[in-house]
Length: 447
Image 1 (cartoon, rainbow, N blue to C red):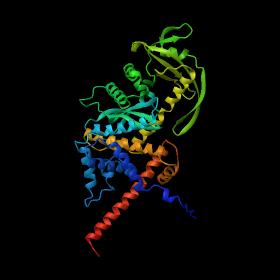
Image 2 (cartoon, rainbow, N blue to C red; image 1 turned 90 degrees about the vertical axis):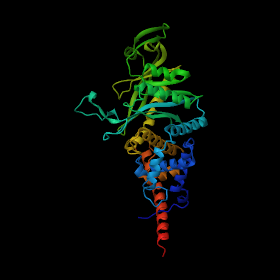
Image 3 (cartoon, one colour; image 1 turned 30 degrees about the vertical axis):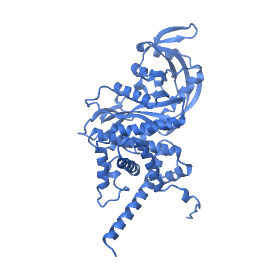
Image 4 (spheres, rainbow, N blue to C red; image 1 turned 45 degrees about the horizontal axis):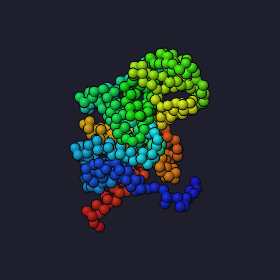
């Protein structure tokens, strides 16, 4: 087999040292609220450890690192003490991440900031005595021997809530919180939703926010909280409410139900869309219609109702929004915006599955778990940012190290970018460790 040399290319490819410099600069932006410079350096080492070993386990994060020491357990002690340090608060870590998100928004200056709000369950099925361990729902794959109501199983874990702003194509965190159903401070899930909405509005103060939510956020109070202050929402409707539909012909309001309104609503728009499920792409015909309604149970709150059945699915998609819809094109545009929402779920999947494996956290105190979760979230955000801002040559090189070259965002693209970055960092840290050990042994045993 002949090897074709690529002259003038190898010197432009990023090295492990270059990637450590980029990660350190990114960590310094997030660590601006930590009390001293030593803790900021430890945060950059924690980020490098998570991205190198693709694990939140402290022993793995510290197995090969840039900390020179004669004691092999010294790096692990340094990281463990960082998360146990009372001067390092969860609020300071999240505040640095939120401030980084605000700086990205200020650069783009959008008219409306789209924010995806979603819940994430961190499963710990084999845990028994962790503080705050809760019983959460696990949605398993469909089983042909059971009906639909048996698809939901229960397991142990921690529920979490996150809001992600879509800025320049980059998912940037505006809120994330890990809570527990058995904690004394826990009141209700709706209270956590309100906290997420208010925190997002504070982080993005001065901008109009458009919340994109799934059906668990279809609640009268939640919709009013989202719309407060002139903000907007686009939420998938789930509850069958009594509404008042506006009749354009008579210019009057007619009381009906959402089911009846959806069945009698005209669907003038017709277009095709491609849906991806189980790595298979299928094209479906989508019909769409909309009307103006008032929600009776929410003090006649006025909004718009979008109905969009697709030929691949049995149930039509219902959307509620308070965004003004002057024509049919505006309604179709909102449908496409909600349709692009699952791209953010790639970030959640990267956190949970073969990526950073956030569910493998083995700390026992809940405050330390929240600190480590903040660092893992920032590592995932850095990886996504790298996939959008790095040069084409750099991305091709890292994906080639990861196994193959693929630009996809799903289970291939981000994973391969992470695997390639892990190889580059690991090679750099191994060389540093080898140089340090050789120097130490030569000093101890001179020739």
